[in-house]
Length: 163
Image (cartoon, rainbow, N blue to C red; front, top):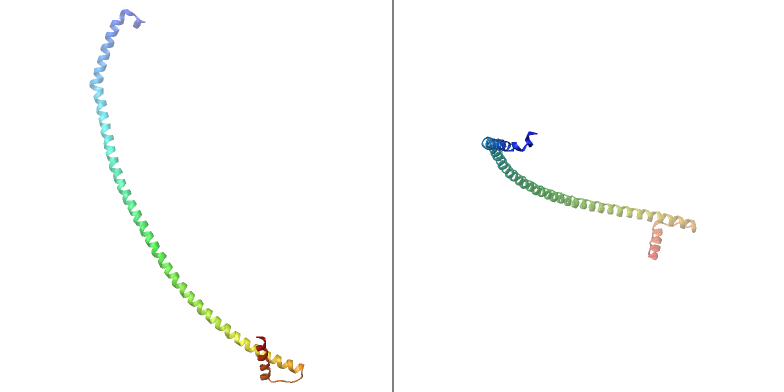
């Protein structure tokens, strides 16, 4: 192999140095500035995008703060409406409860009056029936007929003894 021949090392090193120098100069003069400009344009685009993102972030935070303020106000309004409705319902229920209590008390009073009237009628009918039973029993037992006033007096006397 000719590359490994020690007699051609000097010429190989010379051409290596010349080729490396030419390639270095081409890259240094033409390729590196292009890469640098591409890098700078990308960096400026990234910086612009970051600045835009920061502005959008600030805008989003302000919108979020406004939303949270509106949400807090809506919650407060809802609590106030709920409290007003609860108070109105409580007042209405209290009023209806009072009206119902008065109506039930009136109905109870009327029922007690009807019961008392029915009781007095029943007692009167029982006394009349008792007078007839006393008259019938007296006639059957002793064979004598007594009038209703005498039978009533006998019933009243036995009632006083029972007490």
